[in-house]
Each structure stands twice: as C-alpha cells, then as structure tokens.
Image (cartoon, rainbow, N blue to C red; front, side, top):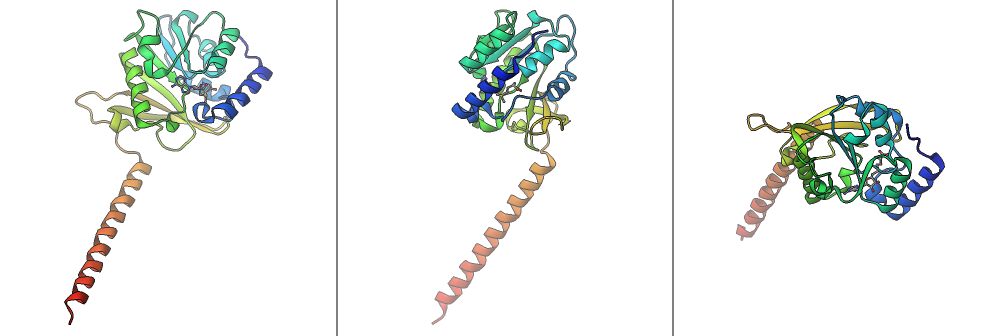
Length: 236
Ligand SMILES: C[S@@+](CC[C@H](N)C(=O)[O-])C[C@H]1O[C@@H](n2cnc3c(N)ncnc32)[C@H](O)[C@@H]1O
C-alpha cells in the first residue's frame, strides 16, 4: 500500500493554500476517518470503477486502494500540476490525469465514459459558480453508468450542490467529526423522470420562508407609504 510522505504533503498543501486558496478549499488534507467513511458507501468488487476528481495529495486515493479498489479500476483527475507530480510520485501504478473536471469524459481512458460506478470528489464545489458546478456535474453524469453516483464532502451544513436546479437526487450520508473541520458527506444520483428532484433541505425551506415573509413585508410597507403619500398630496 503506497504511503504518503507527510512532511512533503504538509509543505505542498501550505504552498497551494497560499497560491490558490479558493481552488484548494481546505486548510489540511482530509482525515483517514473521512476518507474511510466515504469509501464505506462504495460497493467494492473486482469490476467497480471509480473516478476521483480533485485528488489533492491523495488522501481519498489512498483510502480507495486500502478499501479494496483495484489499481486498474481507479482514474485520478487533479487540476494542479504540483499536486499531480506529488500523486505520480506516491502512486506510480495509478492513472493520474492533470485536467479540469469540467472536461471529465475527455480525460478518462477510452472505454470509460458511461462505465464509471462512482465519482468521488474533493473539489470545493461551494467555491464554484453555478456554471462551473453544472459543467462538472454534467461531466460526472456523462461518465457514470445510469445508476452511478457522485460522492462529495463539504464543511458546511447545506448541500454543496443545488440538486433541484441540477436535476439531481441528493442524500446526506452522514457527518464525520474526526476531520478538520468536521465534514458532511453527500451522495448525488440522477433524478428519474417519475421522481421529483430532491426536496429543499430544512435550512433551505427556512431560508425560502424568510425570503417570502420579507418580500410580503416590503410590499405591504411600500403600499402603506404610497397610500399615505397620496393622501398627503390630495390634502389642500
Ligand atoms: C480540498 S483539496 C482535496 C484534496 C483531497 N481530495 C483531500 O480530500 O484531502 C481540493 C483539490 O481539488 C483540486 N481542484 C479544484 N478544482 C478542480 C477542478 N475543476 N478539477 C480538478 N481538480 C480540481 C484542487 O487543485 C485541490 O487539489
């Protein structure tokens, strides 16, 4: 089992954090607890194919191999050149591609698009625009089998992707405390035509309710100000 060199890893992470904090989106690499929790939602067998996007220094990569994924069934995609070099040094037998996950189907080995069981992602989706999110999601679902799923971790309480807008079904798989900061893992799959896309989360519903009340309040106060003004101008 390849072991990640910790000192080099910390230095590289720090360098990236200074160079491009938005794209890195984390202070430290994911913990083995978070990586193993994500892996516990993948059914590994000899044919399971996984694509990892935003691999960073390879914490999820290492866990995928530790949990039984065959080397030839894993394809790793990472945007940053120095991260890719580090990954190639630490995982010399893996397929590691430098590229943007927005172009995912074009980055995979020839017969992979449409045949991938799971995409596991470390990309900080909350830092991306809706256009980038939808391009990445589209690429992921073009690469996945029909029943395939996308696993994503995030540090916030809400889904890092707007599932309804993207036509996805979302499921919160759980919360991992032994990570810095603690993280939540989400699973996304295609919303079938006869299924409604995911309902809003309770936080989302609360936000919408608040917004509706605020708009109603604004409308009523505007109306009463206007009618008062009109009454004042009518007066001799
Ligand atoms: C928070 S780090 C995650 C690292 C690792 N997966 C972990 O959990 O420790 C996010 C990584 O995603 C990469 N990344 C960001 N945007 C990307 C994109 N559009 N395509 C591929 N990789 C991307 C960054 O370069 C960075 O290495």
